[in-house]
Image (cartoon, rainbow, N blue to C red; front, side):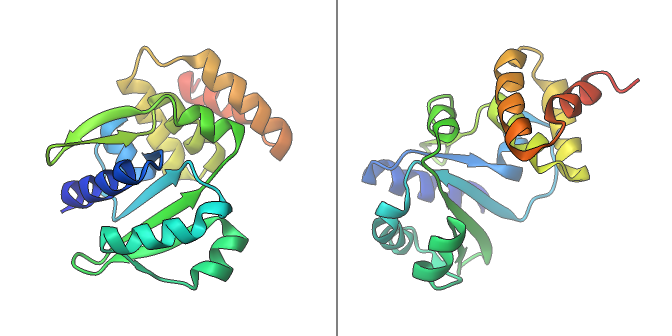
Length: 182
């Protein structure tokens, strides 16, 4: 069910030339400990200037917008959708930030249903999870660290320092606590 949906999304975005990466719980399944997840989160390398194109692509993907794309997405940079056949929610996240553009170049490709689907790297998944900081996110981050001994911690720390300063959050400290809980 998820594999077919992710392949359909990936194929449509690739054909349209829109860079993307699957993040959230679906990326945790690639990089961390298995867990139940009921939705799909996809960061797009597209900004509001491509909103009309993104909305048209949702129809090609067979998705239905759950909100008025014009007002909601312009305010939040997120286009919540649903696959009517499976009732799986799909959040398309518009992004043009320097960090996200860099992260889109570090994706890990996984073949699903015969199509290469782009998932966030282990490093970028860690960054997302540590910024979110909810207990489930921190548990996911711990699993990513345990499963990926070769993760580039300097890259992770660099972005956590930048976001930590901007958000006034102890993000590097969160990482270190996960690495050495004592």
